[in-house]
Image (cartoon, rainbow, N blue to C red):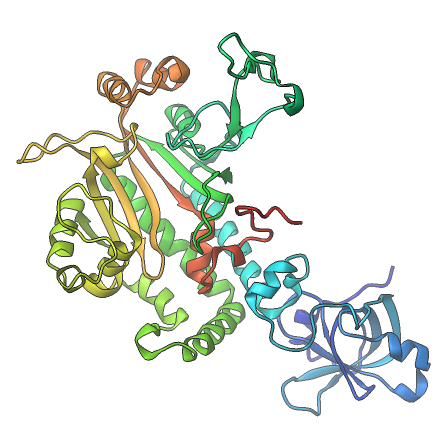
Length: 482
């Protein structure tokens, strides 16, 4: 097989007059002479110059946008502007034709909405080349971060019988015949005849299983797909997404906050160090997009400035109670500009409140702690009642500019009596979580953890505005294409 050179390597090469072979997809073909070729190794194209007098017309007609070709020739110093090298081809082979009348990606700007409809081809655009290179780098950095700190990578179940979040918005997994579903005497579906002999779902979180492993290994993390059957069509929600969930023993809320902040700074720095070209492209793209918006809706910081800003500043830490005090007295609240007005302690903060704290008040990432127990999950460690007798839990949310909540976590309730009482209050069946409670019966220890929605991280680092544009094949209500 012919050995080919990657375009990203050739663009840096000074080995002029050596014979090279490049393979890739045609971006443009001008004047029957100049081919802009891209092989996916970088966003830049290499120019392949052909002598149309020495190539048959039939071949020239097949060099169309989207076609895959192989070109062999000498690497020479480019005489044109915009590139330092080009390939003067002596032979061209068509590897795969592309009908120019039907190929949907033409050499022009396409809307992101249109590209979502052809998600199987959008990788060939510069925008999505950049987005998914950054996504790759962030995933690698996550694994590297936890490996360097001695965390064990744990694969938790995708099919589960538990609802970790207690929200009930789960996809059911079954092999039962929908046209002839077995029923029990009470008329309900008889899951004892199903594959697992019980009702099962796609997981919304690997946290509960992760806690079990943390009680043996000390430090573990999960990084896998999670699913939520939430009928939401916002730019921030997906039905299938990826989660990073560390759990570590002998740790409290303070340790949890520090780990999360360290992780966020580590992966952002890794992307800045290893995806310079991609991030500069996305920075320019966002700046162009901003120009189309009214002045008051434009970002105060460019994408690169925003990323550097997160590295340069310690995250602001404050309690939910302090945040409520700030929000109640804020101008948007006083002037009724918030969609959801803050009038009392206990309110569940909305994205508009979180973004106000980050973008307007503190102007840096914020870690909110000690939320009211009533708006948080059963497994979060209960604090002692405050001076006014209000019950809070040792929870934390990390809020980022443009996104709102990026990370949610807590110290876990390790005290069996407190945990079972909380489960009773919320009508959570203890017999179904007997295995989870066993960790509190046998060698319980303080521990903590959090969840980071990976797509939200990619959204923030790339500056994209719709979460459907940072996952290869987005799943959302009424759409499971590709």
